[in-house]
Length: 89
Image (tube, rainbow, N blue to C red):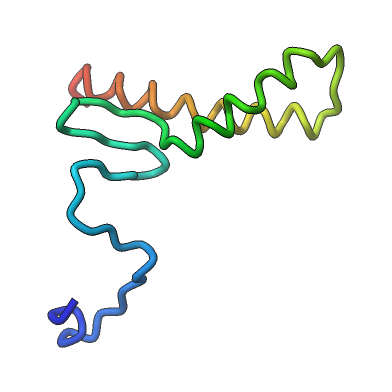
């Protein structure tokens, strides 16, 4: 941070993450020690908490369905990124 101050580079302190074996990047938790990509725990819990409610629904409004699709699409990024890593790009 001292070097950034000397170079007059602004830093967003809330976006800095100290030395850690895992890193969240674009909403995906990257764990190189386990060779895993996964959803961060808070995203996974939010999604898992939604599913029992949806199982009980017989019908829903468009806005609620779009919200669920957004969460599922976000979760699917993990699978897409993993496939890209396994296939080499």
